[in-house]
Each structure stands twice: as structure tokens, then as C-alpha cells.
Image (cartoon, rainbow, N blue to C red):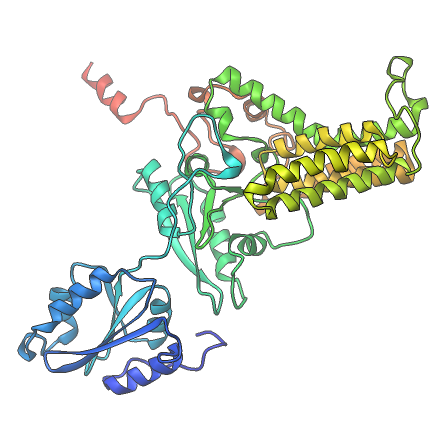
Length: 503
């Protein structure tokens, strides 16, 4: 029972008493979308209660048709058993003697059947949420591969995973959080692979969520299950691709699917999980390895290239003769560090503007950014041309980062390094990099080292990360997850063993 709701009694045999309580608590008569339909079953007063817009109309019509011609002798005695066994047996239904359960289920899309003299209410599963069809995610596009993606409906999302993993040991446990929102949260894992302690930790943290509602869905849940703090590093990975989610399940990860969100949480996640993309596995191994290295270079450039350029531009004595060309050719009135800070803020303003700009105007926004903010700023002497060049390269590296959350964290690291160099010079760069490495080492989502397999060192796992190897070579699941079944490709499958015995 929630603190926001008045005490609710058990279901009574008195029809009018049950209906009065439900009318008051559900706001029937005040809320236009809460529907109540009264009728008679075998001479007994009965009613169905549901939320218009969350249910399928066909089951209601069939149920009403079944009840229309029933005589009293067909439902008494043992009204509940006869109704459940004969007349609502073709749909998922369950009885409850708690009015609180009735209210919760009705608001979740169930139909509540109340019958006079029956001390229980029958809850009929007939949900049909407003939903869009599966579409390819915008931020995880691939040249080749499936074009379906998760939607805002948890049932659709679990179906997309089931389609790819027809394993009877795949578990989809539904939990609820939020005293008022009653948000459905589905924990998905493979029972004989995932570490039971990890599964139990995630489920416990979800059940311990104490808040009135979770309208921001997966992000709010993430901050609860990772015991949210000010650490900018993403401690879980998000995906909107069912194939990516299925791959992580086979590795021993746990998925958290929050209803109303198309972004599925993959927990736990290390730093290197955020550097991998489905496109690398949609090409052959050689091309995939090349793409991965290009991506690594882009990520490193997004963090270090701009601070290094600023360090050498501000301290040209650190450069050898062969690199003296690095640095601004002419001096402008605005100090270099302020040029970089203004460019960083301007880049974020441009990114936010692109999000809020209607698609037909996106081209116009790009022209404004290119000509007015770039070319004109250089011509009037506000910026050096090299400032724009290196900022653009850093921005490209940020956009090439597969994880949007890691890209934002890397941007903060870049700004921090620029500030440290402005204050302390070369020692500031070393202190800043040491601070970033220390933060990476100390971050342990769900007790998992964030830099694994680099720290602690695991050579074989590190090789598979830095070089995208062929899929048949991926025999072992990540040991850091402590999976119950560590081998993905046993030497002899049951079918091969039978063949060997016949021979």
C-alpha cells in the first residue's frame, strides 16, 4: 500500500460497496477516460471497469456477448469458478480479493469484472497500448543489418528479444516502481548464464526505488540502480537495437527495460563497451577491425587533440623545429583559451539547436553555423582559423563515439584539460590526464572494474577488444561478469556427441 493512497479494504460481497470505493478512488465520473459499464449476469448485478484507450475492444465485446444470455443456474453456486472456467477462459484472467490490486491493474490496462455476491474481482488481460511500430534507431544505424528497433512498449521490446533468443531459460521478470506512476520495469537475463548476484542486486535496487513517479523512465531508473552520483562516466550502456541487446544477454549482462522508453539499459558496462558499435560486426573481420581502430582514434582525438594543440600554441618553445608551424599564424584580440571556451559552448548550443530545429529547417541551420559562426568570425578577427579547425576535428571525434553518454563525458574531460593547461601549463595537462585515469580506475559499476580488461589485465580479452576478431573465435564469455556458463562454443555440442557415439 502506498503512502499516497488511503487505506483500501478487501473486496466485499456487497456489489454497491465495492463500486462506491472504486468510483471514488478511480475518479469515475470525473475522469472521462475511466469507463464503467453496468449490466446483469444471470440476474446478478455486474460491472466492468477499464481505461478507455488502453484496452482492446474485441475482448470486451466477446465477454459482454457471453454474459448476455446466461441464466442464474449457470453461474451459481461457485460463481467465480464457473466464470473463470467457462466464460473468460480464452483470455488471461486472474482473481483478486484486494481492491488495491484492482485499481493498480485497471490503470495498467486490465479490465476489472465486479459481480454482486462474489468476494473477488476478476482482472482480465486485454491491454493494447498506443504504440508505434519498430523502426531503425537514429543513433545506431548500420549499412547492413536489421531495421527494427525497440519501441516505447515493454511487451513489444521483450518480443523483439524473444525473436532472436528462443532460449527457454531466458527470463523476463516484471517489477513495478513509483508510488503514483506504477511504472513497469522488466529485468531480462538468461538464467543459466547471468551471475545470480548481479541479477539480484539489480532487482533489489529497482524494488528499493522510493519516489512518486518515473516519468523520465530509463534515466531515472539508471540513477537509482547505479546509486547515482556526480561521476560523468556512463556506468550502463543504452541500446535501441534488439540484436545488440541479445548479444549482451549471451555474454552474461542483464537488461532493464522501462515501459514508455525505447532505450534499453545494459548492465553493467565497462569503458570499452561504450566504444563498440554494431556496424563493426556487420562487416567482415578485417573491415570491422579497421573501423574499430578508426573509432578509437576518433575518441582519443575528441579528448586529447584540442588540449595538446592549445598547449603547444600557448607554449611554442615545447615544439621541435619540424613542428613550429603548429599554432595561430596571427594574434587576435581574444585570448586563445577564451576562443576555445566560446567555441565549446557554441558547439553545444548548435547541437541543442539541431535537436529542436524542425527537419525542413536543418539545412538552414547548417548554413548559419558554417558561414556566420565560422567564416565571419574568422574574418572579423574573433577567432583564429586553426581554432575552428581543431574544434571541428574534436567535434567529429565526439560524434563518432558510439555511446552518446560517453561522448558527453569526454567533452567535459576535454574542457577540464583545457582549463588545467590554462592555469598550470604543461604540468596541468599531466595532472588532468592523471585525474581522468584515476577516475576511470576508481569507477566500478556493480563492482565491475571500469577499465577491464586493461585494469586488471586480461590479455586475451584485451586482444578481442582492440582487434575485432572473427565471430567463431569468440568462445569465452567476459570473465569479469562471472557468468555461470563461461563457454559460448563448447567443443562438442549434444548433437556432435551423438554423432561421435554412433561412429
